[in-house]
Amino acid sequence: MPHPRLTFHGAARSVTGSCFRLETDHGDILIDCGLFQGSKTEKELNYRPFPFAPEKIAAVILSHAHIDHSGLLPKLVKHGFSGPIHATPATTDLAGVMLPDSAHIQEIEVEQFNRRAARRDRGSVSPIYTGADAAACLDQFCSHPYNSWFAVLPGLKARFWNAGHLLGSASVEVELAQAEGGPLRILFSADIGPDYKLMHPDPEGPSGVDYLICESTYGDRDRIDATADRRRQMLCEEVRAAMHPHGALLIPSFAVERAQELISDLGRLIAEGALPQIPIYVDSPLATKATRVFAKHHKELEEGAVLMQGLKSRHLHFTETREQSIALDRLQDFHIVIAASGMCDAGRIRHRLKNWLWRDEATVLFTGFQAVGTLGRILQDGAKSVRIQGEDFAVRARVRSLDLYSGHADGTELRDWIKERLPIRHQMFLVHGEEPAMAGLAARLDGIVAVDSVLQPKLDEGFVLTPDGAQSLASATPPRLSPEKVAHLDWHNDVSRLLLEINEGLLASPDEKTRAALIRRLQRALKEAERQT
Image 1 (spheres, rainbow, N blue to C red):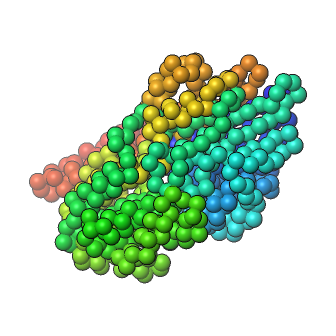
Image 2: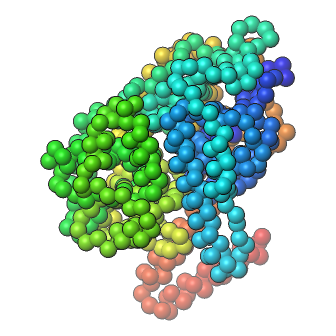
Image 3: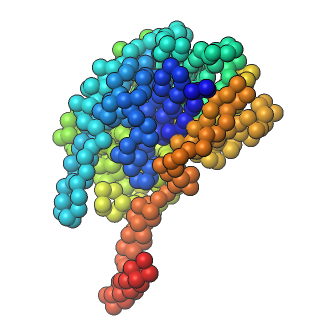
């Protein structure tokens, strides 16, 4: 082909499913291959075929181990990809626990779904991939240190820059030899960490690239006074406000890094006497395994010694088995539970929520981004009742948010990071953000880069990277999801809301006669809708 092509197969006007395909004369590569999260409509993309042939991908460069960047790698291998997966050593170690855990969760949840489907005489489904697929995928990892060029394909090399987001996280610089002129340089920011990020230095990166692909998760937001002292102070205040003699503080947490940060800060607050001796339970097998990886690499982390001290606290407990997890529901005194997943989409946090959401003495504290359509976002937006695994639950617990633990830079920090990458010879693409966040970051860049050089690609949109800049490609196939269905609530969310409202309406009816009349009106409305379709 005369010029390389870049196509955005994920994290396009949304924050999950990161996957960028670079097609060159030397072969095709992927930057990341992540799992979609959010509404059921978006998550269904995980089950559909890739919009490219996996066997034709020559290599993958993985920016970091978070599942929204790595979670479909086992599926890629399962369907024919046989090339190397390039990553930093710490990312390789974290992927070694995260991908098998992702497979296990899928196998368990598919088993539960199929049991419910069988009772309703509905069809069964299969997991996206299995533990065996994850194991096969891990055999293809190749580790490289930061700031060191490595060959990806003939004529194409790459290097990692510390992104300050997660243990092992990296921005990816790609240099591609061209027949005419100098090499083409592309920088993929991946996820950029904020200032005052616990355990990590400020993010790095080269300047003077041809194209910049930059995340925008919090592009429309500013965090005020986000220092380490302020972060711990606010956490302390939230814990104290949550304390109830017979209550619990539930912290839905990403098992990798967020859990370790919370362990570190809570342990320090207890050791310094700012908090009483509160039992802390880490209810996530993945968090337990990931914590061992963090301990292995603690000398690479800023304040790694503080983390190690927190891990030695006699108040910290890890629940390894299912029985130990179930036993948490029998605790009588105030305690803290840190449980995955961070967006309440899966994992043990859903069981803890089923036990506590309907109780006034409980508090749910969110410490990370909640994507549209996830249970976490629905709770964060003030839902009075929710459905979890087919059951209805009133929300009487306090729901709080503390975003100072975010692994993402805010709008000002992203702007400053982009300024340090200048000059950018051609365009920059904003990815990994919902539309308001992308618009907010684009506005901040006015006067720094030309407004018309900031592009916001749609899902599955491709561009030719010409010597004169990027040109959008006309595609013969439509995108897997239209833009209005990306990062928005879908009909599954609407149905859940409707069922909850019907139950609330029936319970509020004064007598059986009124309830019967309401049910008849609903039945007539459904029959009328059937006639019109």
